[in-house]
Picture (cartoon, rainbow, N blue to C red):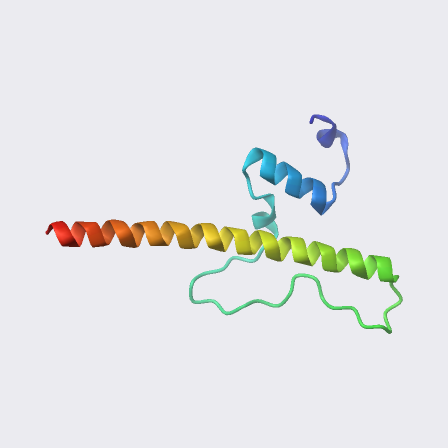
Length: 98
């Protein structure tokens, strides 16, 4: 575990494993601030056209990273939805007791 601190960088797969193991979403620090009223934002990693001089492996890793970020964002939104459902249920209980 402590070998992570000696690294200059880590890839998204390792960061996801650490996020899961520690139950902390490290990816949220790299996502734009969102609110309920905000529209969907542009992808964090721009699409590279075929004319780009990057290799296809590089493009694949960019897509993989974007997929990981979006999956983490979706998981966070699902957790938020569950919490909102709990709040609604509690408010409905409070109203019915009144």
